[in-house]
Image 1 (cartoon, helix red, strand yellow):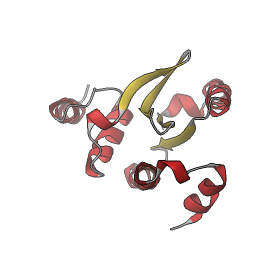
Image 2 (cartoon, helix red, strand yellow):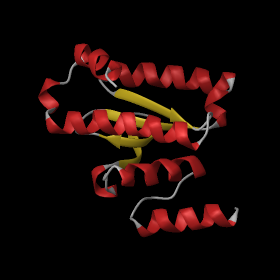
Image 3 (cartoon, helix red, strand yellow):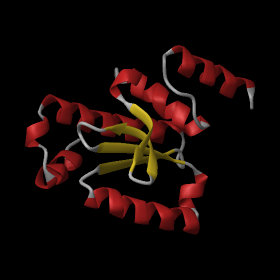
Image 4 (cartoon, one colour):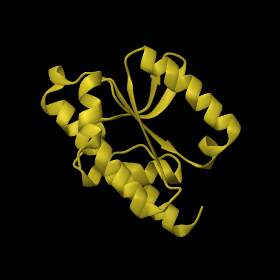
Length: 138
C-alpha cells in the first residue's frame, strides 16, 4: 500500500467510514463532501446473495464503485446478471468508475448524490418515469 493510500484509509476510518478498496475509499470521501455520513449509508450491504458497495436501503438505491475488474468481460457479465436481479427487486443502481480520472469520478458521484438527496427529500414521488427526467437535467 502506498503512503497516500494509507493516509486516505486513515481519513476514511477517522470519519467513521469502513475502509475498502482505493476506489471505494475515494467514493466515501466524495460522499462525505456531499454531507453523507456513514450512519446514512450502508457499506458492503447484503441484498439477497449479493454485496453492494454503498446502499440506501430505505430508498432502494445502490451505488457501486467499479474498478478495472468490472470492465473485464467476466466482471461485466457478472454485473449485468446482478444488476438485472437487483432491478427486479426494485433497486436503482448507480455505477461510478475512475476510468477517466478523479475529476470524472467526482462528477459521477456528484450526480448520484444529487439524485439521492432529491429522493430523500420526497421519496414517495420517485418512480421509473421520474428517473429519465432527473438524469437528463444538468
